[in-house]
Image 1: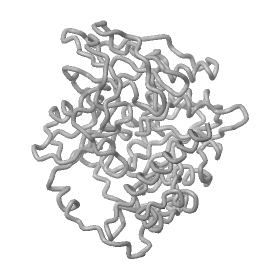
Image 2: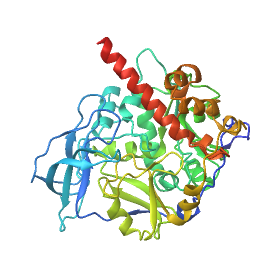
Image 3: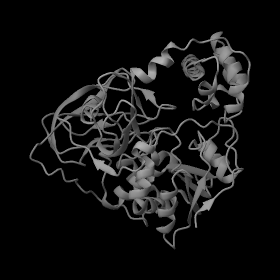
Image 4: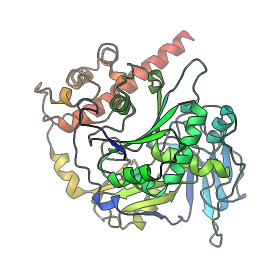
Length: 452
């Protein structure tokens, strides 16, 4: 049987927000319809934008390469639909700014079959597998959108013993990973084979919170006998799915301040990312769609959908009977997701969920008054990294940003939102930290320019 770790095998601190997953956890993944025009940003990942290899008015086939990587820290883009390149220019982006992208108009009579490419063998050299992942356009589908091939490129002087496949999905409302585990077990295990081959890790652990016993049992029952992997369940607690917390809970190792999971001899990949590797590489295909949870009080037809990349958010919401008094839409979950800057922005590879709220849910929060810090230490008891959010918040108000970084480890904060959630004074601590980190990065960039 799969392993249920006792309560002590988890990370310290954290919180227990309402899970709000019941509405979609039992709903199978369904294919979403194509919009009249799809908008494909060339930068859907951390790193350099992809470079178009198509021209305006060109006919493309679903899954065909439409933009190549621009260097190592970049990934390819593929046509999410068979159709015509209507325009190459600026498109709306989640940042609120216009960015380079490609407009595609589907052919109404097309069967929308996906084009195959050159398969990548498990026996291929590591560098070849890494390049296959890059040219498949695969990034972290948990929301970070970090190029997966870069994460898996283990330096020759480093060693990884454990590959952690993250199926925790602790963010409220989201059930994307849950459904992928239930419906794509074979893809996940094929993906793990590629991960082990390219990273050199000796074993893999599929980590799942124990509120998903059906997924844990199914994966355990389908675990290949020749695969050095195990399925482990962990107690429900937020933010258990964060890499640092997961490594601590599973391996008892601590990612050093300013360090990476690689420094502990472990690597983490999202379970949906792993499934895409197993689904795409054997066929030489690229990502042209992804599984997304569409939920929240403002959504009439909730569900888990396989949505084409580039689907405009406005079109998506119209198809799921969104409420007339919708007030805010989160891309991702409400804890670590970002509020949509516009309904004209498209779905990208990093969009794990679309959660809509109406004025009825948000009005009480908007009326909450912010008070001064009362030094109750609730935020210290919640912070999974043992930071001092109270002190950081006070320094942020004084704009002592560099001191926050130098003396109080600001840059280690991964913005989970635990401190803001428990603060009785309703201080928006995470927002303060985001602004402070931006200021620190800008100051560092100016210093580098001055030195240069």
